[in-house]
Length: 296
Image 1 (cartoon, rainbow, N blue to C red):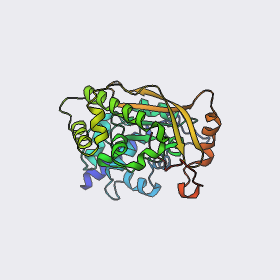
Image 2: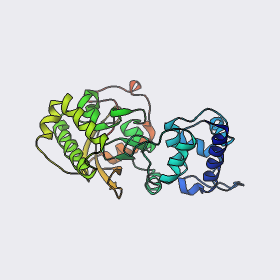
Image 3: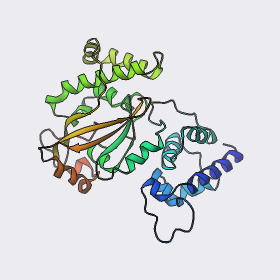
């Protein structure tokens, strides 16, 4: 990065920070706020960065931000799609294609996610790539932010990595497989026929998973909308939830949130998530059917 771009990057971040009110991102205003917008430490917290590193970026110094950090800053600062792309270019990073783990999340969808503090919620793409999760979703499903490439899609992991299925009781695996394949076919039809990401994913799964190939040949098609799931948590155990969806206008992203199923004990179990948090699975007693946390 050139000195000019470093300086412009810092100025741009500062200008975007100063326009955001704390309430816009779910933070309290506080009694002694003397500057407009967010504080630097608040942006750092929202983006998962150290305060020192973010301070350096605003000063036009520090190391070149990674693509993951740019995506996190864009979400923290509620950037529009054009602003997000501009930030990537200032940082001399390639603008990511739509649908990957660094995809732009609409600020309105992020605002809704921020207001769901009492229920697990996350934003995923139509190919089941997790873009952002709230703390309760991490506690319920695990942190999905570390996956890259084809493995970023939970559908890809479902058909290629046996451990991905441990979130669901074995009796539910067949139904989940059918639902994932039908949903993927619907997503592929909605995208451009020459979309490289979808085409590559389908070709790979046809080549490595006989189960996927057999289900794909049945031509079932259906978007996953309202769904009822049984999830296995490594500490709490079996939780039955309703999984609700809000789709973006183009259908490429969806906001998922989980509510307790009526007539079950899941309401009390979900309340325990805030206590259990994201403690290490290895610290929990393992029981039959318990599993590592994975995305639902």
